[in-house]
Image 1 (tube, rainbow, N blue to C red):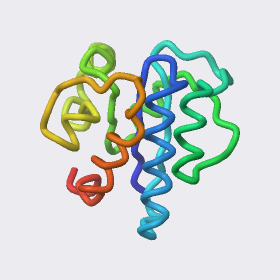
Image 2: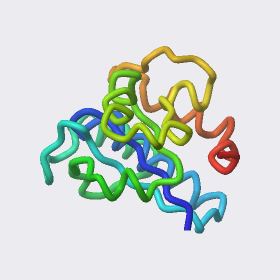
Image 3: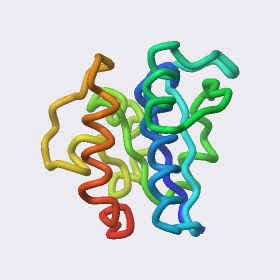
Image 4: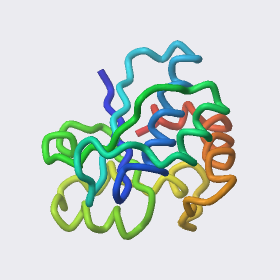
Length: 142
């Protein structure tokens, strides 16, 4: 099974939105051989998703009780692909795990070739979803 890890700061907004949308997009395309996980480099376990993020997910038909997870060493080592929400987060991960350089990318760079950080603002969900929908198969090129 292929494992994709989406990493944010506190894992209560952007990384949860992206991971849950990726799960939905993969399910919709019957790509069941892929597992998507998320975590945060500064996250505590079990913190509820930000209310605005829950609303964004609900608009996309994604509901549930979403909570944060801290980033764990084993999740990093087991992942085939790691998508981070910022260059700073990517560099923090690479600082601890330099041998995984070829499988860590910022989300925006992976899907658009642009290193510009996407802020947790109104419109984030729509922008992230559009990037994923435009090139979902790219997940399998690494």
